[in-house]
Image 1: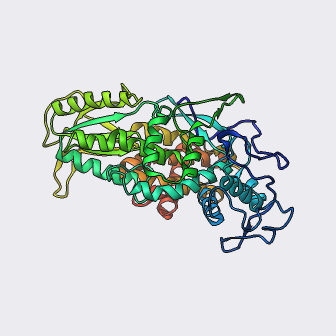
Image 2 (image 1 turned 45 degrees about the horizontal axis):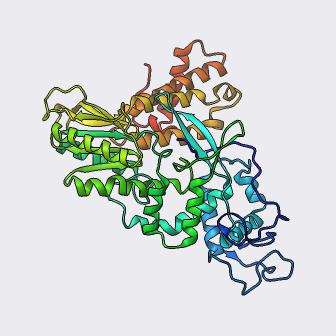
Image 3 (image 1 turned 180 degrees about the vertical axis):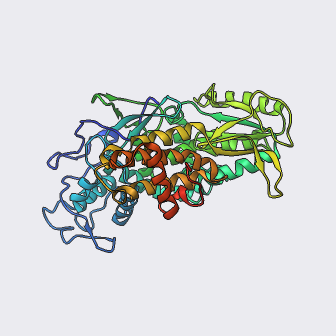
Length: 476
């Protein structure tokens, strides 16, 4: 993605000094308020209340009766702040963390509300951060500043209910009331009914969204001019690279922004969801952001659909990933044809034929899912990166909570289709815990003795870590 979003680091000071003029004449020709001083009063119960300074001379606040170009409730800004605070996240180009923002919360929220309401708010650059993916490639993220995340949340809270009424029921990514588990369950159920799958991945999706096409969709559903104004500004906000240089962009929406997933869903709603439903009736699919699985009745239908969709995405400025897009045969006890592709990955799971004992005690081949190799590799990598050497100076109880929350999260997500596969992966944690014990307790002679000590703890406290409950010891 030529443009960026989630976590960015940079040096640009983008905040407007208090003394700087905000008169009309800036870009977009909108009037700006003059001075932005204190304070949005915040009641303890979480309600935003007017300050006593409102309307007073030299207070920096609008006088009572002086209308703003845009009507934005202060309470909405505070609600957006609480959502952003709950989501956590790192600092943007201004290096201001959530804790720093909280240090002058009332003033910061008032300043943001004042600029949003006057039309003078301009998003700072987005900090680009590149993270390595499980397949060795890199994903470019863009991190907005804390204030910008709050501003985006204000607009998202207002437009999301309207957009949700129109989104397709088989779109699952970043939507309230829907989850990855919902998509996975639906995928497995349909793989048992139809033997062919077209597995698609859009290459560099977030970086290549056409702004003009996206704004056509926005204009169709968003009626407030100020909301459309700020969406345009967020789309065109530059990216700040790690070396401090700034890169302009004319395509894409930063992956990592608060409003980006909603805009991405809106874009694909028209590019794919509605289009394929109208042009290719009867096709069932699951879409989670830019990962798409289509179910077909025959290989011929899957090939024809792939050809049509390649042309459709190209016409909309997107490209299907040549390696990750493929036709798969759902081979099982009931679908016994030979075919070169009999597995695909979706949402961290690999769907493929597996020999499973059914409820009658019979072993049969079913086309089902379990944690993928790339996801398992990433989990082991994260466990290895935990500060095991530093923990040698501590007792297990002092760092167990850190491990518990992460192990519980992995177990809850990857045990959807059975606990044995993810338990085998988390066996790696037990090995690292044994090495920790060996390094901490000098009386332990060798890794085998350390592992036996860990196994003894597992028998006494099977509830200590999520993958221990009901599992067997790793050594005798």
